[in-house]
Amino acid sequence: MDKEKINILIVEDDESHSELITLSFESSSMPVSLVITRNLNEARVSIAKSVPDLVITDYVLPDGKGTELMPANKEEHPYPVVMLTGFGDEQIAVEVMKAGAFDYIVKSAAVLDDMPNICDKILLEWNFTIRHKRVERELKESEAKFQSILSSMYESAVVIYDRDGKITAFWGTPETDKRYGIRAVDTIGRSIRDLVTPDQVEQRLSDIHRVFDNGEKMLVEYVVVLPGGHFWHETSLGPMRDANGNITAVVGFIRDVTERNKAREQLRKLSHAIEHSSAVFMITDTNGSIEYVNPKFTQLTGYTYEKVIGENPRILK
Image (cartoon, rainbow, N blue to C red; front, side, top):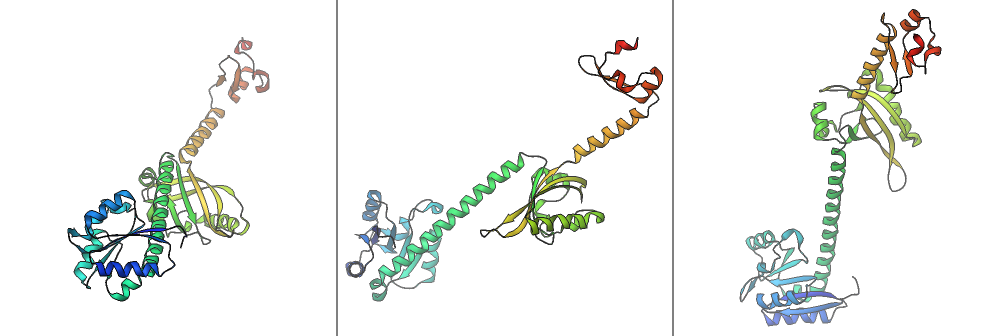
């Protein structure tokens, strides 16, 4: 335990019991500042003056029940409250735990004499619980931020693969779920084999193995087949390492480039049509200089492509 004094509030109306508790701490090496109160009112006054590290209270007190000392917000207890009962009663145990007690103890001479050790164990467990809750809260906050960032990136998702190409985690957005016709969570456990066309399987698995074996980062592009249709993914693959630097998984940052590739294909088709058109095509820039002419232009005018590029169309007169 920390050598700084631990502030413990005991709420006990039985003087003989409070004396036993006091004697047990006096004969221990536990560094404590012990406050003994006899009822709820005295306990509230003491808490208002100084917030304790631990409250141990009798269940039945002259002015009420010890459960009334529970903080209003059960999710943000500033200290653990442990209930003392004169006899073991399952109904009372359920009641005090539902009220928010950290634990309950059935009183006996041996228990009161061993109170320093009991308090030590309670505080250790309490500190562990607090740390666990803090980590959980930080994880939730981090995931919320991650989801917020991801949601703002319409074309993006993140996937984690094991060595066999099985998806162990996938983060998408409601938009990607709708677009792909499948929820991100429903892809977990599926293999990349199930998501790409048969002719791509070996290459995609090879990419994952290269990252696992060499720690190599790479940018790959491929088609996935999902309930919502066929989609082009441009994926940045990289290694995920543990605390010892060992590669444990492959992370893929996915960018959906389906619309980009569709536009590129349309442009290719348009270019092909212009190149082979029987009509004359000329494109100029904002200054009126020729940037492009198609073969039909050179055929009809007699000017070579190299001759007219960069010139003003007036040279044709």
